[in-house]
View (cartoon, rainbow, N blue to C red):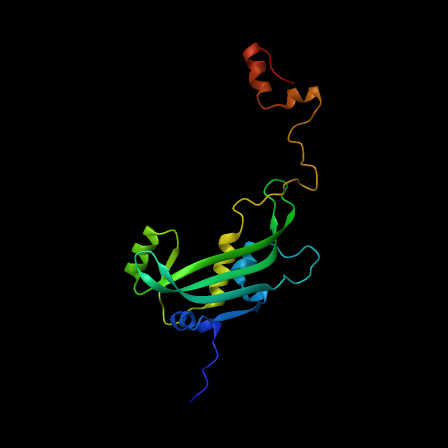
Length: 184
């Protein structure tokens, strides 16, 4: 009897993996995730981006309206640097993602079940690129509008505090015209 072949996370047979109750985990170098790298900033100190810790667990679980189906629990964690949308400074974020995905035969069945359930449902493919799925999940976990709770630097003032600045205000000329004089 031949030994079972090792599971390849880049060409994962999800149905077989789920039937085995398989588990895979490891680290992926940040350089191997170009979409995540392009959506984040490099570390301020010039160090390399931290590796991504990931885990994938397969199971056959009941899916409402479809019975027992292969499922994959994907989790990933890394630290990223983003640009704060308030102060425009760098911001460190502990990025975490976890999602259970069910797999069913056919695109039509996946679309119908995905619309009818809170669970994520995809069409079963002969081979799944698990590291690409991990990158997808991390991208989805990025904050839509990253900002510090409290920015480390004071925000620049949009207006001067002195009262003489009213003359420089864009509507000062309009006010002066309405009053019958011209601004200096």
